[in-house]
Image 1: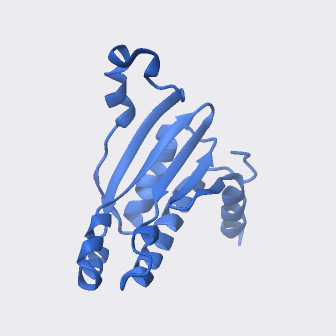
Image 2: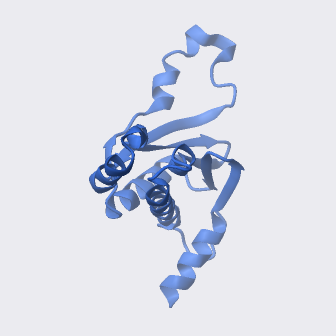
Image 3: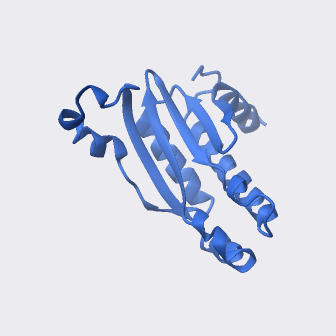
Length: 162
């Protein structure tokens, strides 16, 4: 029971946004690296395996001089992504609608702006709306969202405000 209460408090402290139809968005006061590590572990424990970890912020920083005032106008403190997959879901999608393999592998991006870390995930249900794989993609999207939320809740003290 205590674990349930702690989880509910932690989830309440993490904000989920629904600003763009094709993008799920969460924000937290946790730093970028802690959030990244917790979401990574949660995805993997949910059987979504991270296969590539681009550090987009570091890559873009190499262009700061070249791009001048056009570089990082949003003043982001870091951008990291995870490319991940589930072989089972990839197989199931290919069985139902091979063109939706465009959603495989999946990816999410974390970025830091001010004192907030954001997590954004493109919704596979948007790409697959009306297809034979729509129900499967709804299940996949729900599982990934739950894994992200579990990762965001990890390590938070009960009653914390981030």
